[in-house]
Picture 1 (tube, rainbow, N blue to C red):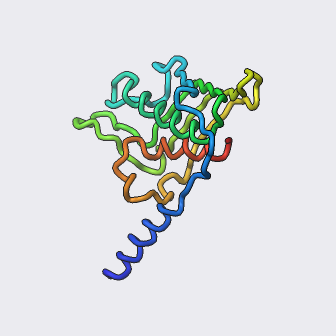
Picture 2 (cartoon, rainbow, N blue to C red):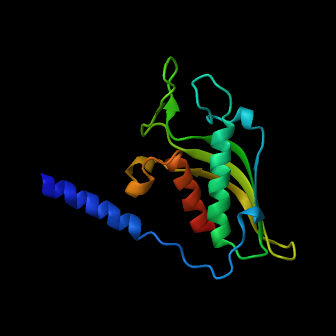
Amino acid sequence: MKTYSLFLIAAALFAGGCQTIPKNSNPASPADVTVNFKDSDKYTDVRETANGSTSQYYLDELAKHLKDEAARRMTAGQKLTVTFSDIDLAGDILPGSINNIRVIKEIYTPKMDFHFQLLDSTGAVIKEGDRHLSDLSYMQTVTPIVGQNEPLRYDKALITDWVSKEF
């Protein structure tokens, strides 16, 4: 049984180490990425308590992650603007919960709706569109052990996946 557990840990570490980002010789800066949250008080679920309002901390965490991920894939001079219209974080805070713990179950999938626009250095539109992201199998995704305590790890993984496919 110990051998099997060690094998799983080794496989997870190997899989985590195999996820590399192609080297961008002239990356953009996170300052070149603008993230907006339109009517965030109406979002499906971006809160820290069962009956609470939208969490600015969560929005800031998602914005920072998006800026960092996108900037690494963009070329210097490019500008990206992303405007979120809805976010439903992975998991849910169940009503009546006294500790406000986010319960992660397969039925509470992460979802995000947004519009984005990527401009080149002259201001011409390179790419633009509306996206609806969701990951129905988010709990089956192997995450590196290092990121397992990361706040919003499933939601950040959704963003990372979109950025890697889109850019």
